[in-house]
Length: 174
Ligand SMILES: Cc1cc2nc3c(=O)[nH]c(=O)nc-3n(C[C@H](O)[C@H](O)[C@H](O)COP(=O)(O)OP(=O)(O)OC[C@H]3O[C@@H](n4cnc5c(N)ncnc54)[C@H](O)[C@@H]3O)c2cc1C
Image (tube, rainbow, N blue to C red; front, side, top):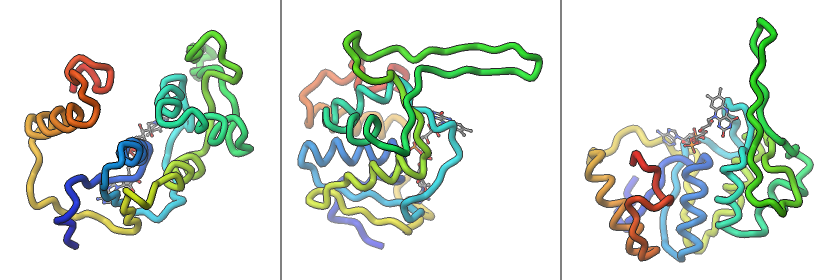
């Protein structure tokens, strides 16, 4: 398969690849997303969407939280995680609300078969060329960690004109 004309190819349409695609489409940037699975596809997971997920969805589009989470019967509100050990000991980790004026729960629980499909359904065909059922077996040009970092930083600066390093857009250990 030749994808020479696409400068940006996202491998994997899980939450990472799907949200990357949605941000690219928001910035009107053409790209291709490839996944070996055909959606809906399931994924082993605890299915929890913690308080950290919500601001990302909100940044993408403020209507997404009501649409995908609050008014979705497949999705349940969650206030945190309870870890319980066989010896009866437990640990509670409450989700922090994004703002003090939050009108819904700070987190949610949604099966990945539903949540990941709902993100893929938002792909904008004007900018996103989505190829599902296509497995990538080999990359012809291996990407080194430092090479990838340089390219991501350059790309982020071009799109957002941000001083990317040290900005929360990238993990601090990136
Ligand atoms: C037991 C368990 C419980 C978890 N519980 C939680 C939780 O409660 N909350 C939480 O936030 N996180 C949880 N996680 C972590 C969470 O599952 C991952 O962080 C998340 O799935 C990562 O998203 P991703 O988009 O990077 O990758 P994935 O969701 O794994 O998506 C990768 C995609 O790439 C595709 N792909 C892979 N290889 C190829 C290839 N060669 N060619 C084409 N396509 C390919 C796959 O089909 C897949 O769709 C849990 C993980 C595990 C294992």
